Amino acid sequence: MSDTPQKHAGGAPSKFTRELGKRICAAVAQGGHLRFAAESQGVHYATVRKWLTSRDPKFREFAEEYTRAQADFVKSCEREWIIAFPKDWRAIAMFLARRFPVEYAKPKDTVTVAAVPLFDPREQALALARGELFDGPKNGQAPHAP
Image 1 (spheres, rainbow, N blue to C red):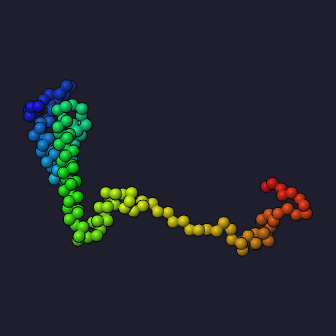
Image 2: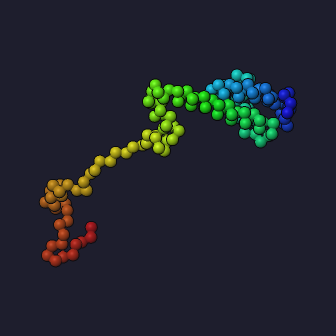
Image 3: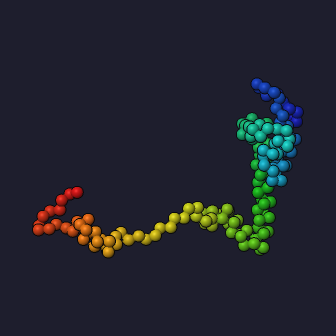
């Protein structure tokens, strides 16, 4: 693969070079967002996203290097996080919650259910006295449907 920009079918020559890809990935490996890493090199973010998702073999090495750059940054952050463990228990708690969310994360939605009795005997007696409740069949009559 040559380091000179190559014209692609249907438009202006591609700005992509291996060196440009390495500079973008170096910024990402230091924690930079892809958008700013691209724009600092004079390339639109959407263009770099197309390079990363392209099936064109000339972008494959760039996509692999980008993935490694992201992983390297995450690993360095995890190391720093782990270094903070002895100083701050919250670092441990947050690390475990993010690394093992099923086991250690707080439940997202907690619902508190108060036990409500199905009926209050005092209210039932008052409703019965007011004739609001059916007290059962009287004088051998079958209950009527409402």
